[in-house]
Amino acid sequence: MTLTLHCAGRTDVGRKRDYNEDDFVIDLDTGLMTLADGMGGHAAGEVASRLAVGTVTEFIRRSAGGSGNDWPYGFDERLSLSANRLRAAVRLANEKIFRTIEENEELRGMGTTLVAALGRNGSVCVAHVGDSRAYSARADRLEQVTSDHSWVNEQVLLGLLTREEASRHPFRNVITRALGSREEIVPDIAEIAMSPGDRLVLCSDGLTTMLDDGQILEILRRHPRDDEAAASELIARANAAGGEDNITVIVAGFSA
Ligand code: CA
Image (tube, rainbow, N blue to C red; front, side, top):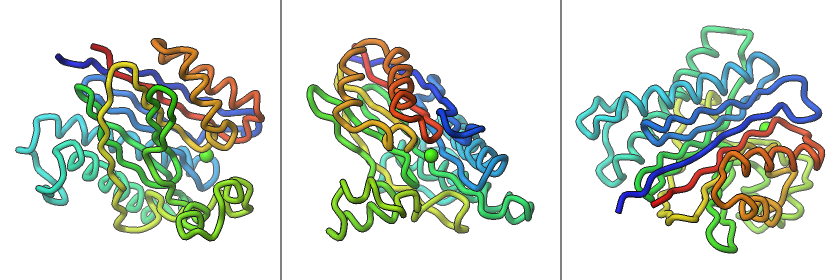
C-alpha cells in the first residue's frame, strides 16, 4: 500500500512585529516541507530565512535522482538517502548564508533556524538547526521530534533548569546553533514512521511560545482531515494568545 503525503503551510507576522522574518516552502513533488525563522533585524532576517529555505529546496529537487548524484560533502553510508539529501542541503544553505554575510558587511549578525522534513510513503526524515521544531501527533500524544539548539534547552538537558523555568527564562531566545553563524554547521537528523491519521507539525517558536502541547494537540484533533484548517487555527490561536512573534506552521499527514 502506498501512502500519499498531504500538507498545508501558513505564515503570519503576528501581532507585535512590523515584519515577518519567517519563511517556508512546501514542494509536494519531492515531499519537502521546510521553514526558517530568520534573525538579525529587518531585511537581514528575511534574507537569511529566504536563502535557507530556497537553498534547501533547490538541492532537494536537484538530488531527487537518488544516490548517483554529486554529493558536495560526500555520501554517508550509515545514513539513509533522505538523511544524506537533507544533511547536504542544510550544510549548503549554511555555507551560502555564511558567504553572503562575508560579502555584505551590512548583513553581519544575520542567521536563521531551519527545520526541514522529507516525507514519502509513511516515512519522514527531519533535519533541524536552532529552535524551530517538528512534532508528531498520534492518537492522544504530541511528541517533540526535535531538540532545540538553545541555551535554555541545554540547561534543561543538564538538569539545571526545568522546562517551566526555561519557558520564562530571560535567555530563552538564545540560539546555540544557527545557519550563518559558523563556516560549518551540521543539522540533527531524525527519522520517524507515520501511519494514516498521524500528523506532523513543523513550526517556528512564534507558535510554541504562545501555545502549549495540549492546545496544539486539541486543535489538530479538531481538524483530523484538514491540514489547512488546522494550520490556520494554530496561527489564529497563537495570535489570540498574544502573537508576540512571527508564526509559521506546516501540518502534514499521510493518507492511504
Ligand atoms: Ca521567532
